[in-house]
Amino acid sequence: MTERTFSIIKPDATKRNLTGKVNAVIEDAGLRIVAQKRIRMSRAQAEKFYDVHAARPFFGELVDFMMSAPVVVQVLEGPNAVAKYREVMGATNPADAAPGTIRKLFAESVGENSVHGSDSQENAKLEIAQFFTDDEIVG
Ligand code: CMP
Image (cartoon, rainbow, N blue to C red; front, side, top):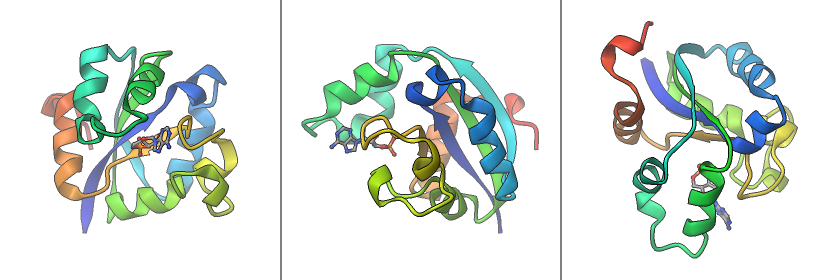
């Protein structure tokens, strides 16, 4: 079923000029980038986005990291896009990520892991709505 998921190319990747290389892996996997913008996240945006992790010990570090350099927020579309993109990203910790995945190819650590992808269709809808209006998504 055609689905949409939300993606972020994180500061560690934008700083190393890897946006195009990450996008090539996404497109080679059959996902279409139907919306994309480069933004500098505010503290309010980062705290809202990661609210589910607010009680975790790494929350402050995570929010600071997401504000530390530009990010590229994206909407990806394709068959089973949520599960497909999680497969393409690889495990959260790059040390555990499978060969050929974005995190195995590019990520530096569990905190600076190059990309985010939604973990469910429900969260994908909420995350997309935090950063995009309907008319910014062109499928
Ligand atoms: P993400 O998929 O964006 O969702 C939550 C993020 O928390 C996760 O990717 C990691 O970047 C980050 N994270 C998870 N575990 C740790 C950790 N132990 N230390 C720092 N950041 C972490």
